[in-house]
Structures are given as structure tokens and as C-alpha cells.
Amino acid sequence: MRTAFVFYRKEMKGNFPLFFIPVVLIASAIVFHYLYLDIYYSTKQIPKMFDALRMMTSRVSLYLMPVLLLYALSLESKHSTIYQLHMLPTGKYRSLLYKLLAAMSYVVVWAFLYSIHSRIFVTTKGLSVPKVTLMIVPENTALYIRDFAFSLLSNIRYVSMIVLAWGAAHVVPKYHQLIGLGVFILSVEIYNHLMEFIYRLLLPVISAFNMESGRNGVRYVQISVSMMTCMVLVFIGLYLYERYSEV
Image (cartoon, rainbow, N blue to C red):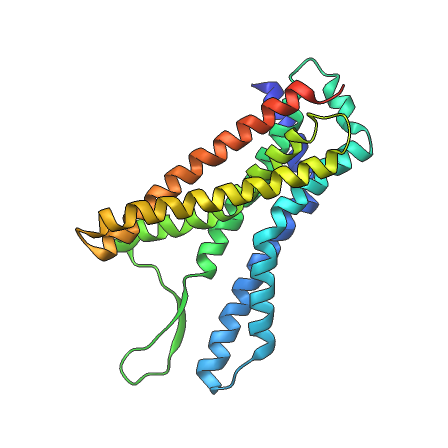
């Protein structure tokens, strides 16, 4: 347990400047979103700058964590520090696993902020001036948990595919970058088709009882299947890395 904590702390501290960037971006998107709605409904003017910044920061933060994880792994290989970790009396997969766990720690914070970003609305009461607020309704807690889960999965899926691609890239002695890119693209396509297949298969069945609850039911199934799929991808990536990475 102590060894695991040391590995995890090392990755958290060493990659803090990288993995914290998406968190800062989504926090900025929340501010820009609030300012955009507040200015628009107060002055009836469209603050295009805030709207553009809101969209840019939220979109960039969504896809940045997998790129930064790949960059962090590339730095380890470029500076040969990865081989120092391989020489430790632990599995080689740990160098990949704990970097993944460090990235996931920041992904959880990012997903929480992203769900807040999507829950900023404008409310009115009678003829009063509209007010920008964060809509949190206790009786709809399950919906907010679902939103958080979807935000989490939107990043986990690509992070897990990076782990799979990184492990698969070490299976062959040459063309690591090409193999990794091909595996990543293939896993994205398979994942998207799997989710679409589940939606089309289950929606007519569940919606026969209630359309709205049917859609929510399908989403919950998608979350469960997606979680299991990501775990399988990570396991395969860690196994391939442990089996084929060079010391």
C-alpha cells in the first residue's frame, strides 16, 4: 500500500502543471457562461466575446486530458525516466497505471465542474428581472448524478483508449506511433458503434412503458456498459504494456 501511495503521489505532483490545465479551463468556462447569460438577460445585448470564450474553453477542456496524458507518457519515454521506473521491483504496468490514476483524479474534478457548467440557467419570478442561477433541485438528484456520470465518461473513454493504444504500441518493435494511432482510432469507432447499438436496441423496449423514463433508462444502461468497456480497455492496455514494453 505504501508503494502504491508513493507512485500515486509522484504522478500527482509531477503532472500537476499538465493535468490541472483542463480544470482551469472548465472553471473559466463557468465564469464566461455566467457572464454571458447575465449580460444578455440584463442588457439584451449579445456578448459574443464571452460566448465564444465559453464555448472554446469548455470544448478544449473536454478533449485536452487524453492529449495531456499521452504527452506525459511521451515525456517519460523521451527523457528515459520510464526505464528507471521499470527497474524498480514492481510491475512495469505501475508506471502507466498510476499516471492514469493521477489523470483520473483531475478528471473527477473536471467532471464535477463540467456538470455545474451545464446547469447554469436563467430564472424569473413574476415580472422581476431575470436572474442567473445554478439550478439544483433536491428531488432530481438522480438526474444530476447522471449528468456528472456522463461528464465523467466523456473524458474517461478517451483516457482509457489512450492507455490501450499506449500498451498496443509496444507489441511490435517498430512503428510505435503508427500502431498506437491506429488502435486509438479503431477503439473510438468500436466504442461509438457499441453505444449506438445499445441505444437502438433498448430504446423501443424500455420506451414502451414510458418515453421519458425509457430514454433515461437507456442512458443509465449506456453509463454502465461504458464504464465496463473502459475498464476492459484499461486492463488490456496495462497487460500489453506489462507484457511487451522493453526494460
